[in-house]
Length: 189
Image (cartoon, rainbow, N blue to C red; front, side, top):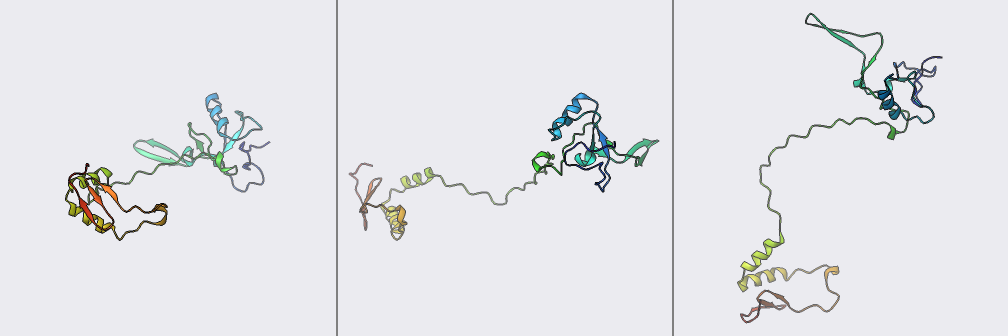
């Protein structure tokens, strides 16, 4: 009996598989074996220490296909007969299984370098600012100018009152009619 990949729907080790992938035996250490069991989505059988998993299910950073050594200040690089798996490797890529079972580690991009803005931002409009300006403008002519600016404007239909339109409304210290503005000093604010 030949070695075959333990991961479901993987055909590495079978005659139907055209590509050759390295197979790694499951770890003998119980703690690492438990991590591998939890990572591999297989319900019908439990991963044993004698089972194998192919290199397709590991991130490339965990699989080493070269051998490096330093000798007398020189770095020697060689390709071994077979690939090695790092000690902290856990299978996480399952291409033939549903996508939610593959847990790829997402590498975060560095944030962009932020440049200070050339033009300072304008201050946001606050309702308190407009009331302070209205209190400062006690001159009746300023109220008249404001009302003359607003006179040609009409509100859209949903904003209009369904009742009879009001002929006048009150501003502080002023009584504003539809066509004229009069101020009286005897009215309370």
